Image 1: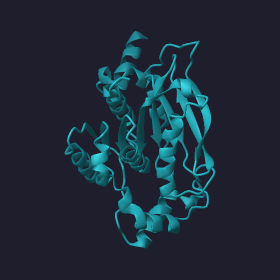
Image 2: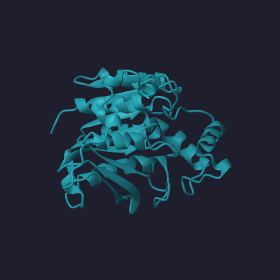
Image 3: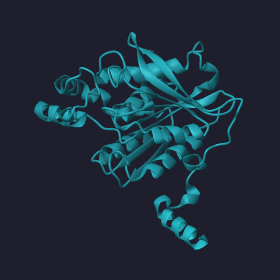
Length: 292
């Protein structure tokens, strides 16, 4: 029996290579705190005259805690909730949300609204009147996003000098292409052909037109001076965006006083076979941020 157990462990080790470097929060539950337990709290976030769906994962222990706002991509099938839970276990709160018009949130979905909703979420966390305020350290709010969510995180970081850092995971861009091609790419991503309707009444045509009108406004490289005000983590993969991600990292790193960390993984856009590595990279970076 002991030999079989040893063999099983040996087979498992390659999946978590260099396990000694993996933070405990990736694979180990923290001690329970009966007085201040970890929780997941549904919240209604005010933005644009409506309230959108959110979920706040609060860390165990007496607050206030630093908080990550985690933005999902387009249309939001991948929410990176494994990352959210690991961050929570490491002692941070995590706020996740669905933008206006997406996944049942009220309002109309647009890319501009995603950016506005990101700013509104950070502002909500700083409101001393919200019920969860005792759990939030308003001076240690970090934005993290994946794909379109990375563009949102970067946009928020560039427009809100009070955030404590930003991590962008495979941020995309809206390169100017033919309108028909843009519509096709958006339609394929939405998967409406198999019956998915994640974004309310938003149409590929309207989203394509918005992207072609304002795509350069959301190019994070143009915000390099503002992004350099905070620590920045840029994570890339073999998804076609890596070259642009590296240009972003280099542009920010060239600014005076910038603090830029880079990680690249040889995997797909969703990091399907590098989830533990991705989570480790984010947790390691969070651990480098200045304390309160």
